[in-house]
Image (cartoon, rainbow, N blue to C red; front, top):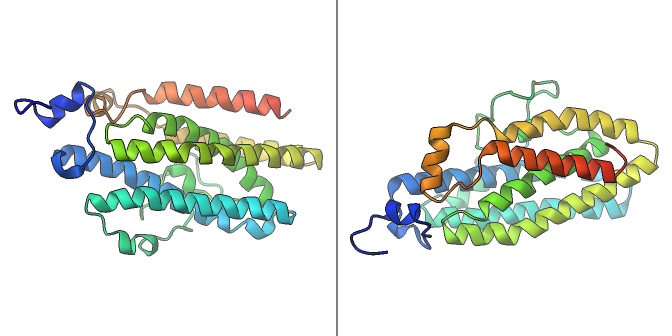
Length: 250
């Protein structure tokens, strides 16, 4: 970056940053929002899934569920460490929010985000037993895959590298969920799975939100967005349709 070029101009030309030191206040704030939303979502997701481990039908399923909880918590820690470099108080983070807090099960799909933290709205809703948890893990896991493909391109290089490390582990969570749904369908629970799909699909769809063109352009100029919400949502829907068809649940 030349001395005559501002940091934002450098980013607009495709540059990347490797330290918070040269970041503008605006850039720091936007990167912190991305990191906080991811950390809070992983923490809330892990907390919700932990509550259903003992509802799993066998030891193999309980081990898989416990592994997912461990890995989501580890992913939160990876990004939280980066937040610490931006000045976040990481020491009190794990206990500073009620991660298990949820809305009523029948709350509308467009209900407000948690007032306590920056989790994605889907993590405001409670799981209803093992079948529901596995179904949610598949539907949201596919959305996470689309989101991580986008987040892995952010202009803050340490964060992009963290997301690139996280992505294949989260993809394996989808594989575990697909295996779980196959077993549940074989056990005669296909109708229960389909009821959970009907519940979770509109709630997961909400995580892509509605795009503000002006904000998208502003984030794109900082190298923090590359694809709009509509394109990402379409990719998720296609991936979900294909996966459900493969599982015989379409």
